[in-house]
Structures are given as structure tokens and as C-alpha cells.
Length: 251
Ligand SMILES: [Zn+2]
Image 1: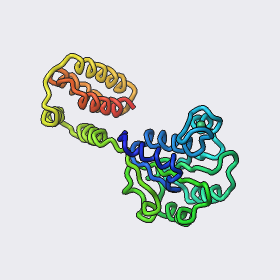
Image 2: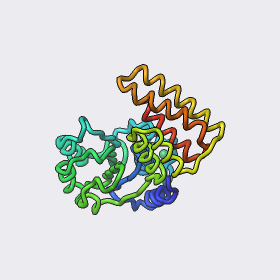
Image 3: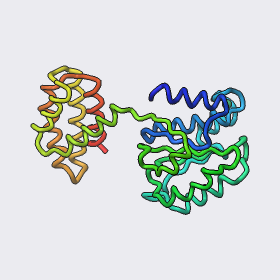
Image 4: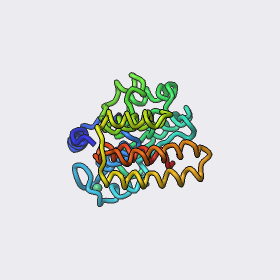
């Protein structure tokens, strides 16, 4: 994660200046992890940021603190009722800490009407209340929410790029096209470590082929990996790309 935005958040918490509404832009796991640390920082009984040892810190980090609510969509999207409930909760007194923190995970699953339900409470937040929106891309939130919040970005640029590349590779029917793309993007030849990784990928792809209705795809990919193995050079970017391919293949 970029060092700077996390440092900025730490400083703001230490100085008690963190905005009551925060948007964390990045992957689902990374943003939730940071959101929980922010809650620990806000609730900690000992340190400026968080000590990790006091009762507030330990329960927050275990994600079981009574004043930290982690919301996720009940169905595909957040229901409007979930947002109404959130507003009600935000107006309750804290149980243990000096305030309450609400973490809205996968905020891209907030439809516009749900986002609108929150505008008033974001405009006039009850004392000690913090809202943390975790979203893959800030553009998925309406401007009126963004204008009331501070946005911190934890997007790993290159990772997004590899996901996109892997997605595109998987869409291509011809293995020659896939290889050509890899060759152009990374200028590759052979190295044994990468070959081992590809072998592992292949064995997982073949295993998936037996379990899955979409067997043809996996067999094609296994075949592609076989051929690519002889021609690719190990590099961190390829390693990451193959991890992405593996995830797509094996899930
Ligand atoms: Zn603590």
C-alpha cells in the first residue's frame, strides 16, 4: 500500500483531526484491514494511534467491538433499510468507546438511493461518529458523498493492470494470441522457477477441469501453459500475472 496515505491517516488520528467520513479506495481486503486499524486508532485507550494491547484495541482488531459495526450488503446490493438502520445506529450513544465507527465494506454495492439516505447524517454527524467507506474505485460513489468525505487511495496500480491483462487473456480464444500478448507486454523467454510455477498452475487447471462443467476452458489453458512454459522468463510481474490466472482458473 502507498506509505503516504496510511501515514496521513495516522497523523490525522494522532491530532484528532480525522474527518468523520472517510473513503478508502482499494481492494476489498486491504481497505477493510485499514478501516479496522483506523477504528482501533480512534478507540485506543493508551497510544496516539493504536497500541494493539488495550481492551478497545484487542476487541476492535478481533472485529468484535460493540462500537464498531462492519456492514456488508445483505444481497447483491445494500438494501435501503440497511442504510436507514445505519442512520438509527449512528444516533445511539456509544457502548464502550468515546464514539462509534461504521465501516461500510464494498461501498460500490450502495445504490444511489441508499447513498442519498446517508447524506443528512454525513452532513450533520453525531459527535464521535465516524463512517468509513471501503470502495474499489471512488468513482462508484456519488459526488455528494465524496464531497463530504476525505478520500485515501490504496489502489495498487500495477495489480489492477495485471487483473485486467489476465481477464483479457482468458477472453481470447487462441493461445497464440495469449502468448503474443505476454511476449509483447513482458518480452519473455525461459527460466526454471517460472516453469515450475506454470507446472503447478497446469496441474491445478487440470484438477479443475475434472470438477467443472467448463472443462474445455481449463484444458485449453492447461495446454497454453504447457506451451508457454518453454518460452517465458520468470519476472515478478509475470509471477503476479500467473497468480491472477491461477485464481481465475481454480476458483
Ligand atoms: Zn490500544
